[in-house]
Image 1 (cartoon, helix red, strand yellow):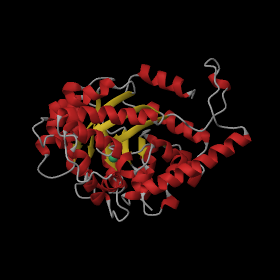
Image 2: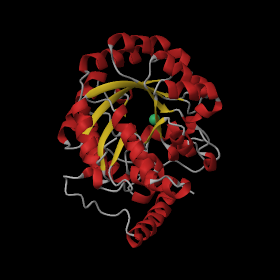
Image 3: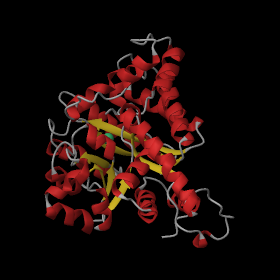
Image 4: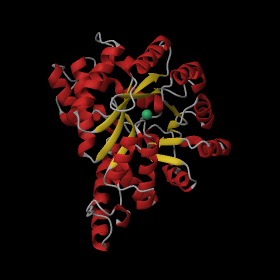
Length: 372
Ligand SMILES: [Zn+2]
């Protein structure tokens, strides 16, 4: 079953679930007056925070069509269904490495300043329409230089797109695992230092790409430099590679881990994550599609929540996966019995770990009725 098919099934289940909630008098619309948030019963989430969202993974068919039209780019097909097939991950995708190949088409639409600016704006507006109230949109400036943009041009274009949306959002600049791009990674870091703000722009760095092929250990010096510059960072780890990768990322100073789903492989790493209050940016559909977790019946998110680990729920690549963040919450409710209280915990964790100011965090807590 494709991600999109699952998404449709999820929508149908979601509707049935909403009806059930309405019948039993729980959940549903927010009737709060705004004065007594503590008296409001905890309800299933209808507003969300996405801390782990890749720009190139968030290009839906509709956005791709708009980007192509704006830039006079001829798409490989004019058929919307065929375009959707090209933009979403195939069911026979065998690994993270295969999954990463799905990004070529979206990236080809973001190689000019106007294309990249528009993409950031359209993605932000898309998720805002789906109930997201705060997002950290990440992208790798070095992947937008095919048609003459410099990394700095790319950052400026993305910032212009960000400023056009009313969504509360920030940018995370990704370095890339790989070969022959060491200088590009250090350039990204220098630009992150130059553009770093507390909110409303570039707020952190990350490293993305093929973790199993290019292990975290290779990037020790890069993150030592990031720490030296005082740049907050998250690291993709414990996804295609095991718990040891997470241990290293924590050793480098990461307070957040992209995925981290495989920490269960080493109880010592689980202990470390708990003791240090590390936040995991978990993305279930992505983990299923990249085979980071083979048996989704054993997906450990709720176990981690129960164990006191700071878990957040995110999309990773919503366009490629054919999902929304709301779909992910409904999926966790229906498949694993994620409760309204646990959802509030996930959102509280996301606010605590967000790369933004205390003022914005306070606004978000108020907006989401989070009192913890
Ligand atoms: Zn990711």
